[in-house]
Image (cartoon, rainbow, N blue to C red; front, side):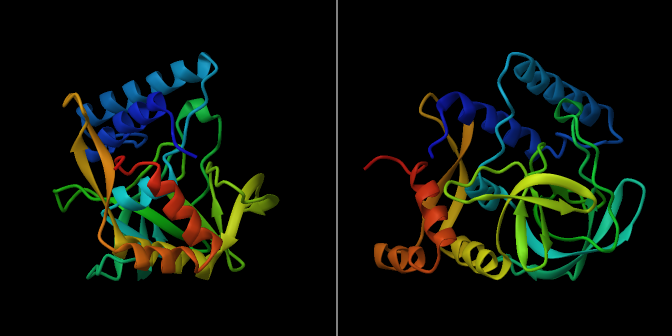
Length: 247
């Protein structure tokens, strides 16, 4: 479903925060800490008003990422973990493992962080700082940029995927209602998606704020063939169409 304008504006603000590698993370620099506290306060204020946090839509997660990687936790340190990449999804990445900042849920979500250990398999949606000494950052302050994989399924944390049922499932010792999908079909869907759809930062019509917007590189026949491959392929295109400029 299309996202309302006010939610798009909020998502854009969060997106800009992540461009500076600051939101929802424990940073060492004072500026990072200040921005994180401010972002958390603003979202917490919205929650107090009865407006729940809106997760970044999955098509934007795919499009905003410098790297989408499937793999597992190889080693754990105090603030980061080493992620062994089994598949860099449409990125042609040249490294087999990377250092990633741990995702720490903001206080307003009232959730305990899932412990990182070497049993965890995930797909991560990541952004990278221009500085090599700063680890990769998981996109999304609601945990949506970290998707667990278990028993042949991928689980969507905080996502609302139209038409996809919820299951009660215990994952890493925590029982929650989650949506899930066949892992291999999902992997194919986002790999092919990144070949046909690119997201770029564009100025809005008032030129006051930049927003992520999709651009299509495949022709209509290729898109139609893509949509027919599975319900997930079809879903991703339908979600993307909501952001394409009107013809």
